[in-house]
Image (cartoon, rainbow, N blue to C red; front, side, top):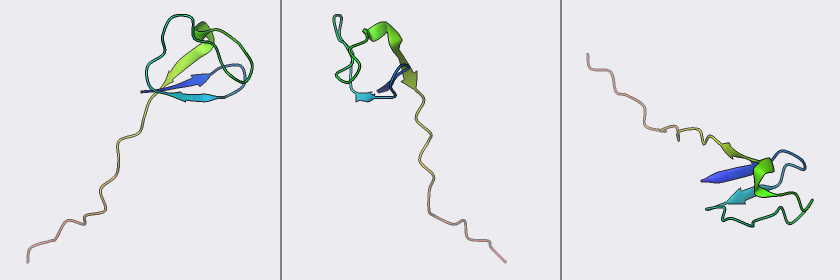
Length: 50
C-alpha cells in the first residue's frame, strides 16, 4: 500500500505505524492519505477470430 503526505507530497510505501512522521516535513501520520493504485493494464491484444 502507498501513502502520500498531504503537506509535501512524500510517498511512503508499506504500512504506516503509530508514531510515524514524514521524513521530509515532519508532519504526523494523520496528514497522509492512501493512494489508490491503478490496475495494471495488460499488453495482450485480443485476437479476433474470423
